[in-house]
Image (cartoon, rainbow, N blue to C red):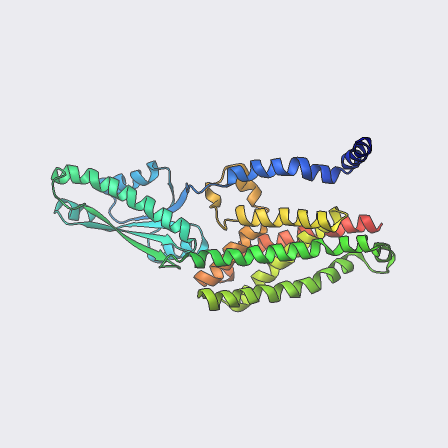
Length: 372
């Protein structure tokens, strides 16, 4: 027992001296619990709603007030044409649009059913289904109140009907929502883990000293480390996309060159993340663990892949801005499902480019210090 205690004492002090491992063992689990405990939320709030009110009277204002008072919707735009709604929907500025037709009050007063149209972005099937459910419940509530006023609630049909129209995914197939997210998820994990082991492997094999003394600049070394994994990641990504087209009927409505550009930007950022991890740790086991932590959980939870970002608390939404998959999924769904062009995705490409430059720069700086 005394020998076992001696070994335990030695191991304890070794863990205390290894601050990186101690930090991962003690604080990272608590941090992720706090972070994702707030982020994991299936409730959908603050849906960005556009309203095209062609009636502009007391009845239409009552209907709009019901949407606002429900706290599920935020009216962010009042377009005047369907083309404007289409532009906002393509750009991701709105999640749904409510069209109140001219003559709604006349139909209500004459005993006819007044139909209002609801347009919903279907690129996220789960969110679209929930948004339609919210819309239907609100309209039915207003309709019930009007029914009491107009017909005393006796035998009359509901005076307001909802005509839904789902854009980009009319049948609300969950695969069209999940497959783009899975593409980003698989590419991110494979690229981060592969490059996070590359430099650490040199250290463990004892060849790091040769690398340090080699007549090659740090930037050239980082680029050389990245190029092979870039092409492997690119081939893997497009194999996944083609497989999704064959197996799950994933449409590619946009430009293939634009899709190649988006995937390339995302892969470069993922590879840079892996290289940065590789410069921070000293063992392949630790590099693998850290690589999974910084790629798997943020990509699944903070990217909008499964949980809507708009429903997260403000601090968690702020953290999601540094998750590259957040921008990649918007770009990928925009190209694949909506068929939109570069102009509407410029912000996403800019964010991916900035992320790639920052992580590659940090990896180069860290590597330069280790080689120096």
